[in-house]
Length: 552
Image 1: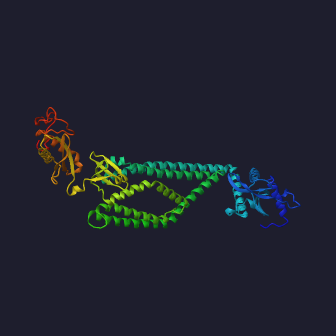
Image 2: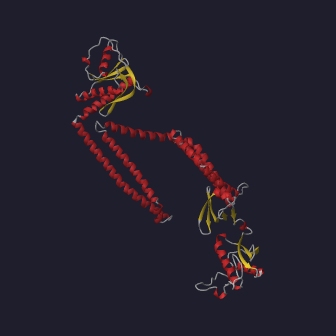
Image 3: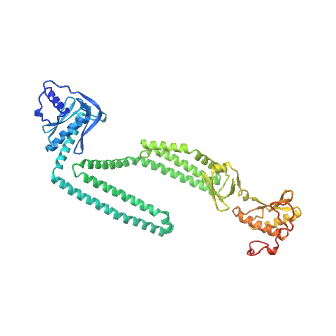
């Protein structure tokens, strides 16, 4: 609206009256000034919002004639309160003046907005802010009048009561449906397991799978209950004039959230399709790799650069590389991958891997060395340091060994690489591994008799190989005795404890039978009587003959 030079001093005088604290002065009572006053307007570091009936009207950011935004907002609020008390709701008009806009309700000038009250960085204009403030003021005055109308309040109470009743009814229905669905989920799971025969019901309950399904269903019903409660509270708040702005903000938040989520999902469909296509191709490549390396492991295909025992770890390594490449390719197409939060999480994850991967990388590289040097195989009977047993698992980070006492020992791969490994199974595939056991006999015993007794004990013991044949060596000629060592080859290294026990029993029986005294571990002088057991006393009570022992 254009302002003539004649009316400019009059409008400036009205604005002056407003900013010095005389809100609500009728326009007809304002004297026409002779000179045009100089109104000083300065920007302020503070901001004050004018609120009427719980609804923001305008934000003030300028200091006018030394009055800060908070003082100006208080003056405008008093003017609005007078309008509400006098039941004045309009008409509302805006009148521009040089450097600002005046807002009038009926015959009263209630608010002056200047160009310094505008947030230029947010794209606001003086005309737009004035129009928006006038619309908000009109709505606030109407709601104030509505709040003083008993019939309107009574109608709002009735509608709110019905809404609350409907909300409570829906929540009650969800609670009943929740109990029914949870029970059906449990019954369906038990029927499926019983029909397929995969496991019994006790195992199903112990696995907590049914509990997980129940918690998942409960979480879905809780989410539905929260949505119903949110919508019901929003609707009730919108029925009353004073709480209507809260209800509108809640509704706007819900609609904006749903719109953003829906729009985000729609916009993410092309990217998700591209990422899914990349993962499908990667899955196909991994299956091809698996088929080829499985054929190598089973011996159907021969490759010069891959051994059958290294086929499985090589397949895992190539599959991992394929998946890593697929993830790198699909990463830009994932929803939110370009957001700062996603990038920050990626950087944080990278730092964690960088600082905590020194020991991990060492273990992984040691695992590769064990695998591709073929130092160990699953099923080999080995000694790793002071651990002796059968290799049950060759992992990326550790090696598991089952000892003769059925203990499972986990040895880090770095320890395996740094210690001596003795494999009793590799030579046993061809010539056999020799296991020693020793006795010390005095020089008065014929060495040929001792050798013959040891060989006869080996012959009577089950679980020993006949090829290579057992041998006896005189491994030491000490001061008082001769040390005889019997070397035998075990058929099964995992039965070493039982086999050696049977061999030692046979040695004692034969030496007792032939009257040869065993002086292990040390022999210094002859005792008064020989330390042997007569054959009639071999099975003194409560001992009984063992039919498995030959020659007894």
